[in-house]
Image 1 (cartoon, rainbow, N blue to C red):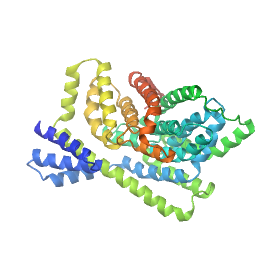
Image 2 (cartoon, one colour):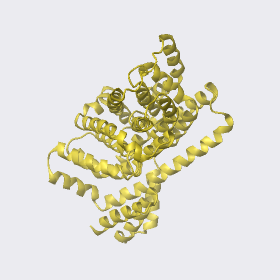
Image 3 (cartoon, one colour):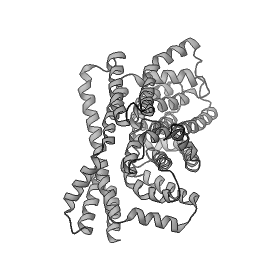
Image 4 (cartoon, rainbow, N blue to C red):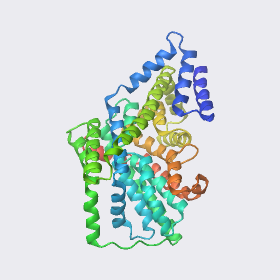
Length: 430
């Protein structure tokens, strides 16, 4: 018990001191091992667990999807998706808010990155919405919350991380499970954004002719076709999710460099460098988190938490509510990747005892932590969205509140209606 308290306290103290999250996890894990395990060298054990945790074929997909996202971010994909979204929803009251949300859903789904969606779509939409008279804080709030939908709609790096943390849940099944919840979040955000736009009398966009809409659709088809290539190949069994990530890089390279020609050859070394830096950060987080997961298993923390929850109540509704509240709190101060790696082995045994499918729980976990990306003090998407909109976190918080409510309503629906997550995987035989 002393070791567990020391692990938690040392981690929280380091976090409050502003130590980077990967170092918080690694240091607290190592020191706890020094206290609790006298029969083996702590430093060697941590290094072994980090290496073992990273020794996974599925994790190879992460650097490839990161590189594909970088190529899309600079290759003109965002602009074409925004043009397509304008032709679909731009003529509605508050149409540019709808355009922002739909474009983020499409771009996030293709790139698998909430940060990339916030930067790419926000960079285009913030000045456009300001020109049309939209409040820039409202625009930023819409962009920030809708960018997270790409973490649910595949391909998604965080669902790959969850597959690793859960002990091997099918990545293809998780990808399929994310579609409906991601769309539900997007629709919920559209409803709230539309109501606010109507209340504040934001302008209605120009109606685009059928001919122009068709032209924009044709222009966006090569970008959208990536979804068909990746998910179609996985579902049909032509390649695994990891192999699909390599194909995604090849496809986006051809599209951005050779077809759209918006990425110049001289820019490729910098794109590779940026992708490598992002990959290194993610892999360090995964490695140290796997070490912490091991020490928690050694101290029987998952089993104890599972027994405590079930002893507290036998109501599935109450236990899921408690887990959601804990994860909502955790998401405010912890990045998504370590949160998934740390809390999956803690809560998954408890919900599986209640008969919950691990695929369903994975979607709940990711959707829950998506809200944390939009909240201070460490919400990365929040800071990116404020940066591209040239505003501050304090000013954005008020327009964010009703959009948070929409995301929480979507979370409640996904939590208590399992078929929203499980229908598509079952339909395709997973």
